Length: 337
Ligand code: SER
Image (cartoon, rainbow, N blue to C red; front, side):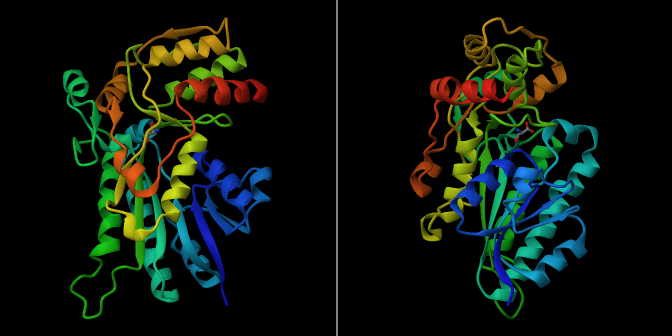
């Protein structure tokens, strides 16, 4: 018999680290992982098996299919929004073709063990695209169906994969004689910018917030690449992981949507700077906007309406902006360096 496991792709990334820690601490599922690089020692010891390689390698997924019964998938592997603009075709391959492979794998798993595989997909505020700052200011907290006109390759990839997931969950091979849909239980969260106390992201466009705080803690000067008035939603990484785990465990019957916004606070870059300065007096922070990256952040909403996540599956972030910075991020990041 094959062992029952949870699969995490992109496990060595920022969300992956937090998720491995959380799931391993709770200990109710064995974890297998896929990542291009070996997991760091502390994380490697917490998983049942790590597969090193690309999600695009079919033989890797076939090996997993033969060795394990995967009950839940957290598909975190992706090329983020800034990096994707330099290599859009590769981004499409990883973000879209990679997700298609994982959905197909989930379908095969579901057909093989007869139960729906819960498929957690981290989408993003990048799925939104607002045409200008006046519209962004007027839009306020956007709802899931509004402003779905992303300007980045990454945002297009995320939005399309939300649809792909819904297709697999509800309409897969709808003309076949037997009913094959329902084997993938697809659930997506549109994450805001995420700030971890442990890791610094690579290749995102919301990176100015985590970069600012980590640079201050290291005593390094930081030139913020967006204007002080730039505003998008953010969340502390542990709350983002908690959101993923809550959505994974939610009763299917209560889920009225395939895709849910979530957020915790939505400061301007200047407000983030003030909180960082309060925690690290003497930090050298300047603003030197990169007009092209600025345009991407300007196209993302200033806030999102996450009322559906709160009512359908109990989204309940622990940290607001004050507590997030003063009680969590600043002390932990200070200790880290
Ligand atoms: N944080 C991501 C990025 O900046 C958005 O999902 O690309």
